[in-house]
Length: 531
Image 1: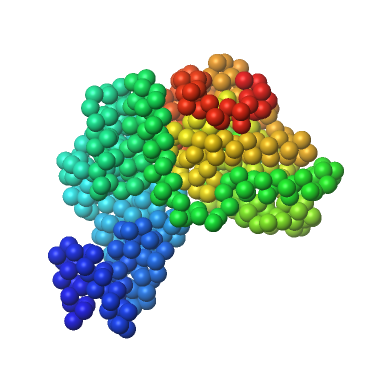
Image 2: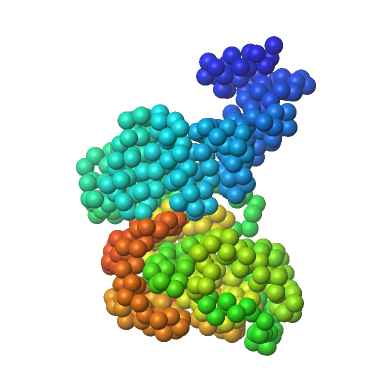
């Protein structure tokens, strides 16, 4: 009888009651997919994705051909930052039920989490066609349009979603983003405050609403109110992500470990290991790195506007080497000890990943744009000694404050940026490591200052091309227009699409009172980079 009663409660909309009864039945020895499904949905709703995943997997063991269970598993995997596995789970659900709109929607969500925005858009469009009453599909499409700076499309899609669900948080945020971009501020602060204060609003949406509220106040030159909203958004995100990162060494600790390992290696060893075994492709290979919000997206899109170049936008092509040499304790010493035969498999896997992530890369110069590859400089030096490197530089005060106020995808490193002082210390640690690596490693590297690009674009880009061995092309002057047609997954996408402007230069000065406590931490880098 327990299964029938659980079903009745679910049909009545009483998930909590159904899950409680299902848990009691499971504890009493019952085993039925509906019981695990009901309990799993409540666990996922409560934020316990790992426990929910276990329940859905137990349900799938009993009913492996149930597409809804595969889709529920995918949602858990997305929540656990395992979006690649979520894509596979969605594909299984779609194979079992091609017309299952929610599986197409969740596949889009997983693809968006991976930065595969073009695929995400196709999935959302498919979900919308299959289920025209699904408000979240046009809401997500509106969000994608807002991210790439297409404000008219964002407004139209958001309004369509809100017509179906007037309380839809995703659509509300997309509409607010588009209206803010067009300077339509009337009523925005009130609407975002209402969304953020509604107890039904999901934590991630609440944080986004508070961050956007900060941007509205910033536009109104209400600096103190803006900073309060940014801090409230980050407090919300810290509360959401703290369970995931509790007990895991954060960005500062990881960089300090890498620094200790690096300085323990005889500096004379690195130049001697330069080697000659790199692939011929390496001569057509560029790394763009530095730090979050330092201008790497701008550099990547400028280079991507060259017809002979393809840019990997923050896709982890070097993940195999990073896992073995950066994440594993003692990895740098093992890297330094490898001979060419030991290095070659890592190079081969890197290029396999490049071809998988960017099929159009064949025969082109590959730009690997990932800000924190600055922590991978020893790997770059050993695997790709002939590669060229652009190191993005921006006023450290603008960098850290921009990370604090802009929503980055939260991982163990970017989690540090949710707190202003922790973020400054992480920046300091990362720059210290990069400086130590640059002093020792045989690198082909050039600093590119964001402010110089803004002040004298063509001169700076021509200088970059000379360093990189690229022929200047006039198409590089039109990078902003071209970027609008690309699926850029970083928070800088809309800014890059607007083209060059000085809006972001010296923003820290308006918030000097609020960020005063981090200036001593950043002072040495302000001097080092000439600010």
